Length: 322
Image (tube, rainbow, N blue to C red; front, side, top):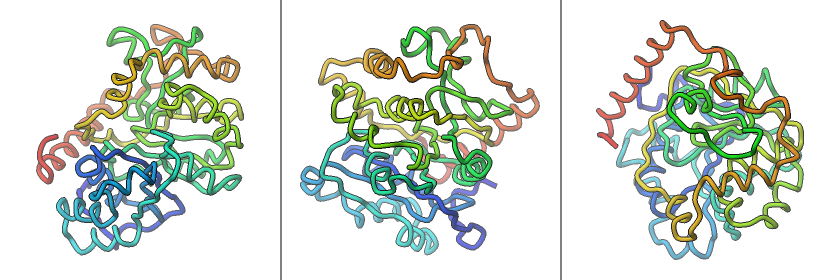
């Protein structure tokens, strides 16, 4: 269980395409770890696409090629199986237009427009647990008309982002590790991965993107969930075995906000207000856990925590501490 090694013979490929993006600062460290984890899944995707933009900038970066990425992954795991999986499944796609963080989903949604192809959206700074693909793919068969993920939150009625205090945050941020049943949310977040289908969206997800301010363009989670809400596409956090391992070393979004004198609270709240007429009125967040999900019992939580600690320990043994 939770071996951080690929097993081509015990895994089989399912009809899922993984899509993510990255930055020059993360290409050599965080991204290879994310890719390694996605190649160590119990059920493998049929493709892993790394979208990079804009093309003009990427071509100036001599070390942002598929060969370079393969070398970084090989430094983590030089096994024959890992290299075969990388060669078969991983590719880099260049985009002329810079969509910022939304590069992880806008190009692939446009390519598969109107189709029901399952697409798993990931961030580049997580080491995903081995059942990520299997869990979301299984739930997608049961809920084919919903976006499914491992982390999310409900929107406040005043359309202000976030809550204060550790106890309130624990109620507000819903993580799959803790819940025993699926839970409907307003916003699913990409850092823990989510599964979508292009048929959920129409042309507004691209056309409107070019009309909004840069702060809204940078908060991609709210953008894609807001577009889903306008189309009456429900979003659910589903139960899972454990958490992922965060491998973040650089913070490109925070650096962008700092350079442009924007803060995350303002950007997120601005984006929430842009979709003011779209958010589901029966899903407002209620304070003090009034509409909290059903949590796992303490025995299961302790067991899941033990599994997660085991995953962290094995990660540290293979790759060291982040």
